[in-house]
Amino acid sequence: MLKQAEKIRLTIPYNFKSRDMAFFGLAALVCFFFMSHPDIWETANHSYVFLECLFSGRFFDYYEVVAAHDSWYYYINGANYNILIYIIFGIWELPVFIINQIFSLPLDESFMIHWAKAVPCFFYIGCGWMLKNLGEKLGLAKEKAFMAAMFFLFNPIAFFSPVVMGQYDTLCLFFTLWALIYYAQGRYQKFSFILGIGVVCKFFPLMIFVPLILLVEKRIPKLLQYGITTLWLYIPTTLLFMGRTGDAGGFTMAMINRMFELTVPMGITDMPLFILLYAIVVFAAFLYNPKSEQTVKYLTVYVPMVVFGLLFICIHWHPQWLVLLMPFVVMTTHLHTNRTPWYWLDIVMAAGYFLIGFCYNAGQTGAVLFDGGWMWMLFDMRIATQKHWMHLDNFLKNVPFVFQLAPVLFTGSVLANIILKLPVDNSTLADRLSDGGHYDRISDKVYLYGIFVIGFICIWTVPSVLEFLNAFEIISLADVL
Image (cartoon, helix red, strand yellow):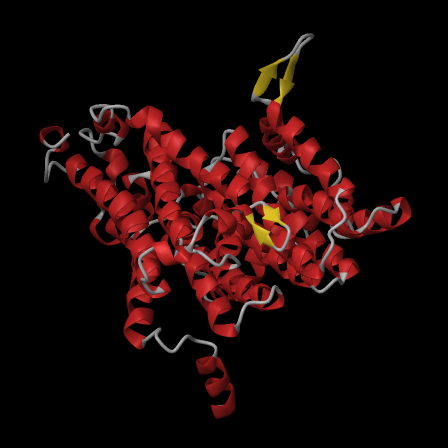
């Protein structure tokens, strides 16, 4: 036990002290208990219904039972995900279910919200662990790989999805990062197999699978083999409930349709921009033959960043999806010699992301997230019931050009990552352009604090708290903005 503890201690950078762990741990705990999004409420209750169906012999009727809404549990939407999602949440909720059955207790939904929210948060921590291991496989020293994982875990955009909103895209991301560890080792069959679990959670991993496998394999039979392997779990779980999933198929198709919505005019008709760009990336991957193992390792994280970056530039995204992009933004930065410019750009990207949320998705990304936390449960303070509640966008419109600049900040940051991190010979375009000697020599830990404090606390937390206080007439935002 002592040897294991010493081993864990040695993986933590010498300058990362207990007070640092306490600061970030406290920030995570506050966000965990004081905020959540209605999606996790619904999934928590859907998974509890799954357990009821399982133990009452109605396993195959699960989706229909949810759609019928015979229970009093809160949810508006049907069960729209693959059955694996509800199995994972169901396993976690099983102790609560058993206790309720033994003592004939009703479901305590307020408790179940936070119990279920722990699932995406645990997977989020697991993503950090996987990213650390991936960093080591890509050539980073243990301490640097640990810091890369910390920069991901407390990147404002990544942190917001599971810890604040309670969204579960981290399940998909966890298996994606796990699979990429095998990819970096050249074990492509295991890469395809593990990625197949992520595909069941959400289809996003398929989008990076295609160009990544084309980089290292050009033979059609082998490509088909790897492709079938990625579907090893999706096919049986889909067939298991064929014709029984209600609107779940339509929900998935609606997500796919987003990739075709943004179009550019052509001579004959309009053309979907993301599909065009993605096709170019896929063909470039098929065409390109990396000259060194180190290049392949860098492309392991650069290609997913390109694919997800282009996707989130071209589609109308949900805020929680952006967690899929951030480990690759972070890891490509830590594979660079000169990281300082990218740390500043992380703050710019976070500003664009949160301002887009405030301006264009105000009802889901601002103070309303407090309605799923302890402010409501302990003090019955629900912002949604306040007649004076106004979204932040009602006040931000008084700030000149904020609506126009928000997408520029985000899109510009993403494009800068895609273009300037392009591998060139044994370096990147960014490292060729920059010189570390011309930047302030500030430690990585200081930048970690800066990105989190400025990007999350100053840009999201403070405005959201002000919106909350304004709704309860404690302050007047109209006097400020």
